[in-house]
Image (cartoon, rainbow, N blue to C red):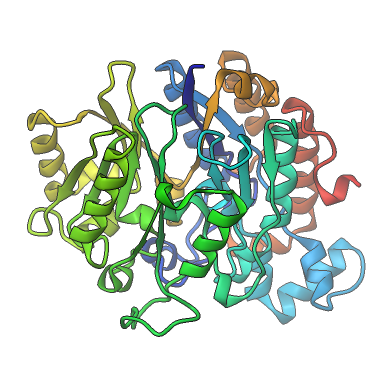
Amino acid sequence: MQAFEANFDGLVGPTHNYAGLSHGNVASTGNAHGLANPKEAALQGLAKMKALADMGFKQGVLAPHARPDTQALRKLGFAGNDAAVLARAAKEAPAILAAVSSASPMWTANAATVSPSADTHDGRVHFTPANLNNKFHRSLEHEQTGRLLKAMFADENRFAHHAALPAQMHFGDEGAANHTRFCGDYGARGVEFFVYGRAAFAAGAPGPSRYPARQTLEASEAIARLHGLAPECVVYARQNADAIDAGVFHNDVIAVGNGHVSFHHELAFADQAAVLAELSAKLAAQGVAFEAVEVPADEVSLEDAVHSYLFNSQLLRRSDGRMLLVVPEECRVNPRVSAYLDRLLASGGPIAEVRVFDLKQSMQNGGGPACLRLRVALTEAEAAAVNPAVWMDDALYARLTGWVGRHYRDRLSAADLADPALLAESQQALDELTGILSLGSVYPFQR
């Protein structure tokens, strides 16, 4: 049966703002307290979704989360009605208010880890929401993410949903941002590649000294067990600690893969030669010829990679089997990265095309094209079982751009987060969105 890879992009939420919450993410902290434009952010994301759908790629939409998260504030002792809760948090703990108001669920590469039915023990597509335990504002996401995924992938005969791993540092899980699947055909058995920053239960090589290693080996191993993956279909690799200290907080800031192709930096992994050899051998056992496109550090430095988000790009297989690389505008602004891309296209390798998108609102908060999407390999029958209202087409694009125009502000600062009107606007918007996307009552305020 024919299969394909679908991308489900996170729709930027109405509270998109620059609070600088993510230590280790250079763009996030570097743009803290700037003035955000939620309307522009959402429209930029939708424009990318529509463009890829128009190119023939399967494209879906993931809804935002309800923010500010007043339930989280109440759990922390802020009492009263919504207005009182927001006012007290703004006065006594503005950093906590900023955290519970974050629109970070827009970066759905962190939403979950997904294993397609060709790889799993029971022949179903498996989803495990990421606990995102390293950052408070992101640790709030996994329960809502699980509800949204179940509303989109509801058929229990085809889709299996797991709870997030224990919310504890030993099982820190950052989702698909540290997971890639390599394969020949999308419907055939593949090799799932899990990248981690540290081993929590065992002494190992020295870790990063400047920024935290967010993903643990133990979390990756647990997900492989939950999804029923065979050992011959799994490769684990440790991130290069120097790369983490340079701002590579997730693997998808230094590497991206699709099909039989890996596009990565020379300094992406510890013991890189051994990692690539294991990937090549396990794919060869399945009749797939692995192709590694490695970017030399003397052509693109770690600093250039982090600031341009060259590797936080989408690698998409075209109908002719060659690859399209979707990059942010920042890659063409950086002269060294732009020159590298020109050489890459002239090389005759597997990457045949580069498309540039303006995602500045997301980029300034630390997320590029790859951060905005969750990849799900599906057979035609599985795709038919997905909630049909979430697939991008001309009609949905028109409805969503109109929805954004009605409900989103074009200016948002940290001071606005305490405004009860912003909460009311956001809830009204999301209530309407659940009707557009046929999600049902997935938000706490709807219950």
